[in-house]
Image (cartoon, rainbow, N blue to C red):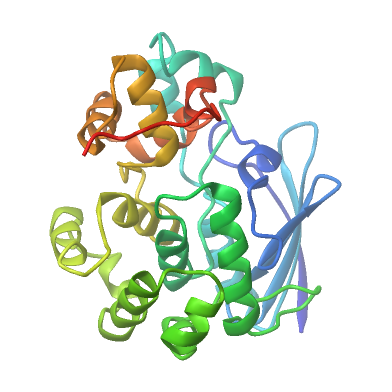
Length: 286
């Protein structure tokens, strides 16, 4: 195993801790401001952000060049949020959230299959419940990496568990069956290089795959900045509160529309809005 120490300044504002605070604690975890993450097939990295905003990275891998390229992608180091900040800093809804955390970036999963796992486990339940199911499946499917971490699983490793074992982790049977079917017959890694509109049509032909699931796979698996999280539970709460009525999925699409071509990043900020985080019951329109 080779080792490389790297100093890098991300393009544009960057906040490592806030971007990584929702990590799964199995494939990556935060310890005292240091992000420890599995990288690729065999690598690990420790990342700390310094007061001057540069990142100090210790990377360990057999193929350091490949691991570094993958880590840059997963950390979104080259995806400058400045155009969104400039365009919408004065926006009455999004502007205050942008000013509060200009360096927020959606970090990418270690594989498109792992992003798909999140897309299926997170449907219509709270983040805490979804992450608990995800972690149970990761413990069964993900191979061990260094530093006490697991590596993001491949499609074959997840689907190889079978529907029964996945259901035993807490995922609804229909979703477990749909996820296994999708991962078995669709090459998600390849789809990331195709036209987004065509990919959206293709994926939504699959059972249990709607706009939110496509958005999660595209944003966290492929790093598409305009992949909005249409139908997200928090955004539904926000849209319902703003509109004064029971929300519909279309309301969240309308909420995100002004922020194209950065609807994915805008989704992450809006999910932190106080109205999106309210705990009181919310009933969606039929």
